[in-house]
Amino acid sequence: MNAIGQIINSEYSNPGDLLGLDADPELLGYLNSLDAVSKVKAINKLVKKHIPSHGSRAEFEKFFPELPKHIKDQLLQGKLRLADHTIYSIKPIKGAKTIKMFESQDVKEVGLRNISNAKLPKNMALLVSGIYFLQGVAASLDNEDVKKATFDTIENVGPLVNGEFKLKANKVQPASDISHRKFNTTGFSLVPKGFFKLANPRLIQDDVEIEFEVELGTITGLDPNAVLYVGLEGTATIP
Image (cartoon, rainbow, N blue to C red; front, top):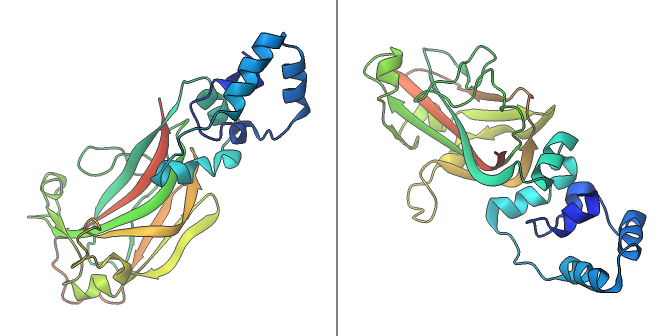
């Protein structure tokens, strides 16, 4: 199937953006090559009103032009789909004022993180719509105990609530030097615990290192077994 045929049969409400086509000569040539009946059917499909996407998916579709070609092609071919997704990492503070939540030496391990080497898997692109930031206290800093830690909001932990974070990927900083007070969600019944909705979502492409740094002004008063949870939530391309 050629590019125009893929557009006509796409599941997306703005599939032309996948290929960057807008009244492209290729479209006119394709339509003119059809017999009268097929031409009418094709035009009807192109102008058919789609049910608009909502939420993170709608945000993702606006970034179709930024997707690398190999991901665009697989979306059109149906080999990749858009789905809700969260990448997460759990790290102990270990008495440090700077905590890197994603690092190049990290290995995917259930209960600690779901990506390796601080990078998305091949063929995955993630539109980060919001961020979770939570804290907990493990019985010890042994991985097995860290995996059993329960998490809650940071409001009552002074050194954490007064810290800052920055997120960087694709040589762009979607969030830089932002106060952790953004994660104060107590009293907001319609907001998940510790969740900050980004006003300016950003796309992270596969094979690009993700940096999420937590900066604390002080570690005084923190439990020695304190651990942090960061989750980057949005819509991703998956098989």
